[in-house]
Image (cartoon, rainbow, N blue to C red; front, side, top):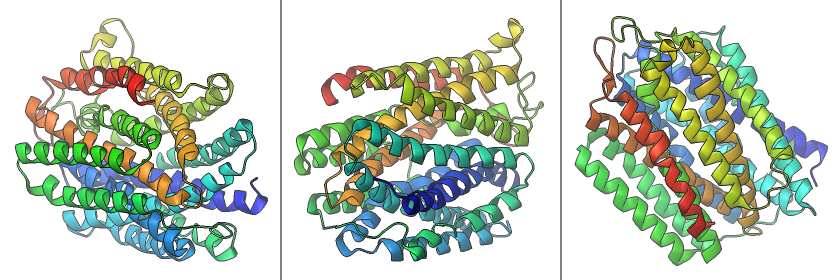
Length: 452
């Protein structure tokens, strides 16, 4: 069962760090790179991919925690390091690559504290005697995250990029409190889990080497490296892990990979100036970030309620994933309608299509997909090595996101969809979104018959 101290510790991590700090950092990236560094849409997506890579290397950090009981020390060190990095990047005086490096340190701080804490609450869930209690723990954690996201989204409408990053620096110190006070990271028997450690090291090596590949390799070399690495890692999991665990991991990896990340093109198109996209939405950057984030947070909160009520009678994970895949595909269609300007033809404003379509429906789908994944991951976590098991499965999902981002910007290059301050090419943008967000995600439905 969860105690009041546990709840306070989870609030310090999930409300302040993963909820508010992570949201502020995410919302600061688009204005930072688009305005301060004048980066084009494809390079923007490459840099965000690098910044998010620490979420793929979490298994090594979790293994240190489970093997040597280093949870408290890791939380304190990475939280303070990330806080300092956020303070440095807020000056916006560093070079482009230095700014990417500092943002990556911030991301690593949030990711590593997150995975250490996930091991703690997976252990708490393992002590719950009923499915209802497990759902309550998941709901508590996600409510904290979503409240933090909503608060940060509202505040971002009134804060400049520098203040957003300074807020990240302040919030990233908060996980130090439960570590020092003993509210979390104590009283859990841990041990080394060799398959998890071995796979974690392999995943870390592949993810880390993706940085120079992303920055310097040709498109063909990138595609070959990423595809071969992904296939070999999945084969390795079936050789190393229990069959049920390996199948679930392969499915969760596939759901991430098959929803290609083309956010660089979509974000830049919605916020492109009139001279670049005549007759387009031409959203103000601050409105696009804040309004979209607020609506996404609100609907994600609604999705938590839907999960606890409407999904309560659904015990088959396969059926849950069918529903979320369908919602994702429907949500993507609103982007295609807007890009083709069909909404204007029938009198629907761009803001209504954006807020009720992409921002709302995508948020509901993402939340409804994540929560059963969290429950499935928690059920499969090995006793005594919760952090390592959780980190391994979550790490593969996050690496799947990195693969999806890589394929996404390579598809943008192939279709010649690109935006910068002087030139915009959106001729194939609708095809890009259709393939990335409708065609490929549909494949997760037949895959579920084999892997779930």
